[in-house]
Length: 267
Image 1 (cartoon, rainbow, N blue to C red):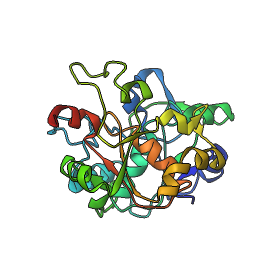
Image 2 (image 1 turned 90 degrees about the vertical axis):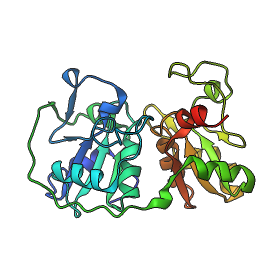
Image 3 (image 1 turned 90 degrees about the horizontal axis):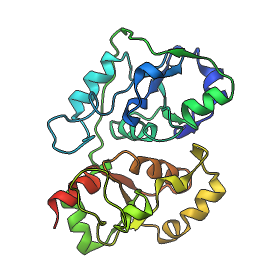
Image 4 (image 1 turned 135 degrees about the horizontal axis):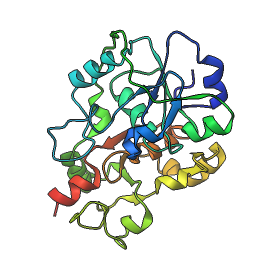
């Protein structure tokens, strides 16, 4: 299986594979479950309330190894599972799930390019969302700590400039032209960071072609630096990270606290 993105046709052709697990990451978009359908047999991957550290004062904070492992087992996920993740907005929260599994050492995972809208557009079946119980899985996590960066790491990089920080927020937010969505959060950006809005990596809810992504990331590729991705709260940073994965194989990680943390703790 391609370890980055798959098409609806690929998923349809492989939907009956007993090792296949389809995860629905749509809840992170804030859309009500009662108004949605899902790919048949999909399991809910709740980033905000299940797969995040609820003790953190920042949203969507990466969970502990034990919390992630336990929650995956409750969803019936095995270490041998071939995981496809989608969301209802095309590509939005699904790359966050892809990256979380990568950071927990699971390699057999891909994002459904275009998500639920593309699945429906191609004429494939859906079902209403229903609560299900799953046989307990045997998933084991192997945490890759270098894939997550702290505020201290980012501060140190201000002097060393060894890593390139890429901010996935909109240009207006990056340039402090509009208020932040979170109340009372100051405007601005991390010093020396560059702005690649996550929307620029997409077209009609799907990833841009390799040719267009290569052009978009031309400067990054030529610098050949290791990359740290940031956004508002760690969700859309993963969209740009996954997009770079299609054209650039250098080291990549996520600043998990992102602008929400930096704006509150760094003055």
